[in-house]
Length: 129
Image (cartoon, rainbow, N blue to C red; front, side, top):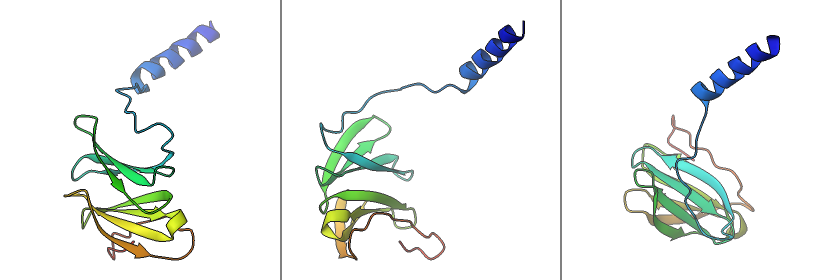
């Protein structure tokens, strides 16, 4: 009887707390998607593609690819700046950070930084990356 109770509890939790696949979006074969960041202002998902040196922008309302934005070599990490509506992309192999304007999905600037940038974090208190 104890096994049946455990099964029923497990089954109940699976029904209530389960997740399901809504759709699959094909970024690109062998693109090497390595990082994701969501922009809640525009409801867009930004995907850093390490092998293809770009960021794919997906419209989360339609699950469609909007564009691919070329970055520096080896985009590795992404951070979203809610205050300025910008995505920052660390380009490991070109020692730079690309700043993407989320309103236009265009590059604002590319900032040279130290060797092999691999992580980003936006400080909302000081509005700095």
